[in-house]
Length: 114
Image (cartoon, rainbow, N blue to C red):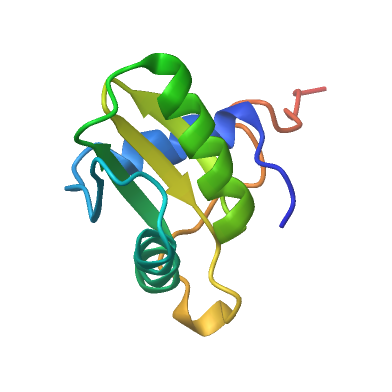
């Protein structure tokens, strides 16, 4: 999976705004079942919100999100408060529900009248 650019992450955060969290991280932290839940949710939805219930310290949340990124082979799109947003594009092009823009809006070549 190639790294997302800033404008792509911004676009995905906008899409995730209306979503409800699919996965909740409790006092046990990262477990096998948590990773399976994240993996299944990413396979099904591509864009997933994860809510921290017990971890309120910023350093712990950062550590857990990095571990989820590594283990679930996904990318952190954003984190606000106690919610993290992850994205992993569906391998099968026919099952993809999220289309990530390749170019930044307004940065394409402009034609000038001669």
